[in-house]
Length: 190
Image (cartoon, rainbow, N blue to C red; front, top):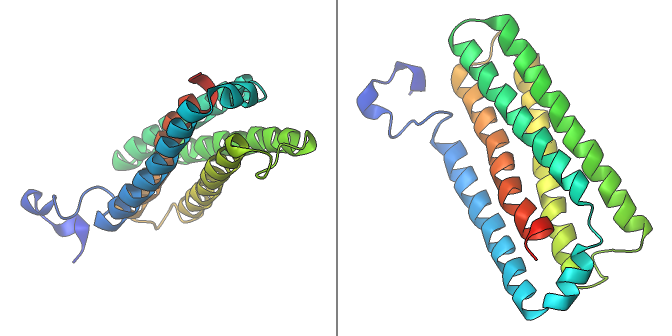
């Protein structure tokens, strides 16, 4: 059944992007929240270790990464709105801007990863850095997948359906949401 042909009464079964993307988002957010919850619990058990190791993180990079992801998500929302209103050039620039800011996140996070690796803060260093590498590394992979999805949307911009654009946008916003939970838990809360 084509989601664009459904009437308003059927929209609960075909939310924006389709039901499958929402199921994926639900599972991913629950998985990350369990990991972040475990991190927060371990913090209460090893306060001094976590505070000492947390001081090794680059809060400025994390702040700018937050700005990059939020800007990217904002441009994507503008892009989708433009597509719905048949403003193709705004749609294209919005998607491209979203991809550029997503790449900005990846580059800055890679620099942070390299810095931690160079200082010998690896996944085996201690429990804090085990969480750091697992949670931020898993999120990094999600951002890579999100950028690939946005590139596919951009490359197929003339023929792709609105439902598929929405699905890509929902995945991308999931990356934003996860980072907005991960950022304070890992970088800010002492």
